[in-house]
Length: 62
Image (cartoon, one colour):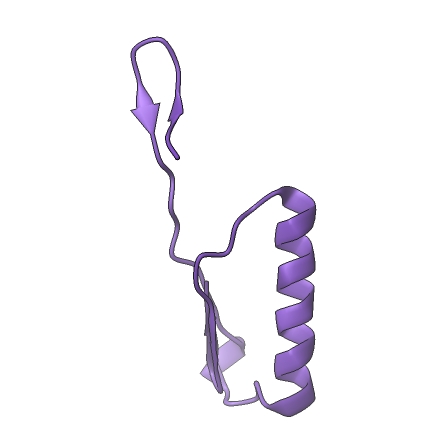
């Protein structure tokens, strides 16, 4: 759904990537679940809708 003002309309979508320092492959098992929970809680708190997300061993896409 587009936001609008008198003479403008916009839809803002962002591609966000989080990476550990030096892209070390550390995102596994419990850390992966913790990151997922934290990001979901933060987005819910801020009123942000996550359209798609993916955790890889060396980065997280939102």
